[in-house]
Each structure stands twice: as structure tokens, then as C-alpha cells.
Amino acid sequence: MPGKSNYLNHTSGFASWAFTLDHKRIGVMYLVATLSSFLLGGLAALAVRTELFSRGPTIMNADSYNKMFTLHGAVMIFLFIIPSIPAALGNFVLPLMLGAKDVAFPRLNLMSFWLWVIGALCCIGAVIAGGVDTGWTFYTPYSTTTNTNVVATTLGAFILGFSSIFTGLNFIVTIHKLRPAGMTWFKMPLFLWALYGTAIIQVLATPVLGITLLLLIAERVLGVGIFDPALGGDPVLFQHFFWFYSHPAVYIMILPAMGIISEVISIHSRKHIFGYRFIALSSIAIAAFGFLVWGHHMFTSGQSGMANAIFSALTFSVAIPSAIKVFNWLATLYKGDIRLNTAMI
Image (tube, rainbow, N blue to C red; front, side):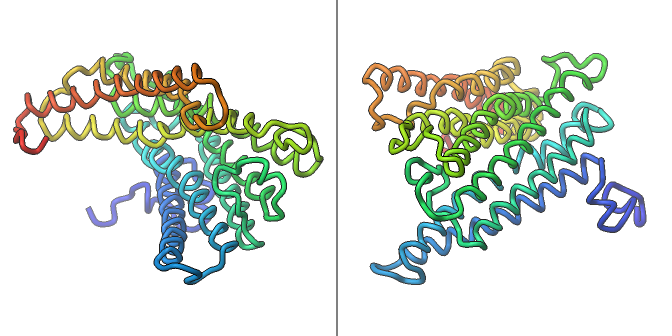
């Protein structure tokens, strides 16, 4: 009905949005912010591809290219991909699916958004002040010796980590404590199972990255030998810490999307999802496997052949819960009112 009050128009003005505790409004603000970051990262990608269009300098020199490449990677990973589905869609949908009034900690939810904004401003400010040329991985020892704005950028990523942790903590407590009477664990929507697995990764893996970046800052500012071999540090240690977070981060990106697919397939096939428990538990299994496979990013780092074999086997094992999801999706489609042509598979 025209003029009907809703979460978008029940109050107006900047302050009503900036200090809102409404999970829907916070989800909308995350959506606008992450899509703006996607635009920035996309423009950086276009600049990188334009530079590679022909041999020799096209629109920038080598130093500018490295900075633009780092900008693209850092923005797309830390400002867009990781917060986009959990923080935007998760904040909007999770309480609705539970039948709850809001998330468990509305003020913490708002704080997580503003921490995201502060972290983003730190990263963008570092770019405006000259940029950083390390690549989004901040690999040592280059990141401990380059004269670009590594400290400001890693400080921004450190703050963004707190935003991610607070969002994950909020989701875990909300799912545990605000489920309605009668909604047991195995009656929850599958999207909530996916968000739950994602939140576990956010809470357990993100602190490792935060501490690693803090150690990198300490090494640059105080000259403490942690990762720089010239100071007695070990650069491979940085890789272990970094990828212990950054591989589970892959599942921060994909698990919520898998949850969405489960819901969409069930609705549009007009059938209860086939193998509900298997899909639900596979979300947790994927999150668990994500903590065990970081070494496959380090096959050329000098680790032993045995370690390479173990990490390879664990990596292949991730295919098992992933395949369970796909099998049950296809089974739901075949059993539902939608009939797949085998040529489409």
C-alpha cells in the first residue's frame, strides 16, 4: 500500500541510518558499501587489464601497476567478497528465517558495520597517500622492507578483521539463542546452516590473520625480527599464518552461496530438499576441512614431501561434502516439479 511504513521509510535522515539498530537497515548499508567496493575493485581490475593490453607501458608505469594490482586484490577480498553475503544478506535474512525480532546483539551489529567503514577508510587513505605495492597477500620480506604504505593498509585490514569477527559472533549467538520454540537444529533452513559454518570460520580463523598483520606492523615499526630473515625472522612463518586464515576465507565466500542454492532449488522444484541432514552437516564439514588445507598454497615453500602429500589428500577430501551438496541438489530437482534434461548436466 502507498505510504505504508517499512524499514526503509519509518524514519528518515542520515542519523536515523547511521545509528540504526535495525538489522534490515544494517544489511542494506552493508550491501551498498560492499557494492561500492566492488565498483572500486572492478575499476582497478579494468586498469590492470588495460595496462596489459599491449607490450610496454600503456597507461601506467611498473610501480603504479603493482599498486593498482594490490588495490584490486585488497579491495575485492577484504572489502567485498568476505563481507558481502554474510554481512549484507545474512544480516537481512537471518533474523527473518528464525522469526526473531533482530540479531542477538544489535549494537554490536552496528559497531561491526562502522568498523568496516573505518577499516575501509584506512585502506583507501593508504592508496590516496601513495598506495602499497606488496600484493594483497603482503608477503614478507618485501612487505617489511618496501617504502610504500604497508602499515596503514594492514592496519585497515586488521580493523576489518574485527568487523568480520563481530558479525560471526553475532550470528552464532543468534542461531543458538533466538531459535523459536520447536525449531530444532535439524529444522533450521539450510541457509542458516551455511551462515553458521561461515560464522565459525570468521570467529576462529580471522584472529590469526589479525595477529599476523599486527606482528607485521610491529616488525616494520619496532624492528622486531619475526618474518624478515635479515632480522632473524622466518618469511615462511608468515605464509603459514596468512594462509591458515586465507584458505578458510574461501569458504566464507562460498558457503553462504551454497546455502542460497539449497533454498532456491527447494523452492523452485516445489519439493523438500533431498538429504537435508547431509547438506546441513556438509556445511559444517566444509568449514572444518577449510582449517586443515592451508599448506596447499605453499607447495614450493620448502615444506617436506610428506607435508605436501598430506595437504593434497586433505584438499581432495573437501570434494566429498561439496559433492554431497551437489548430489542432493540434483536429486531434489529430479524428484520435484522441475524436470532436468540430462543434456543440461
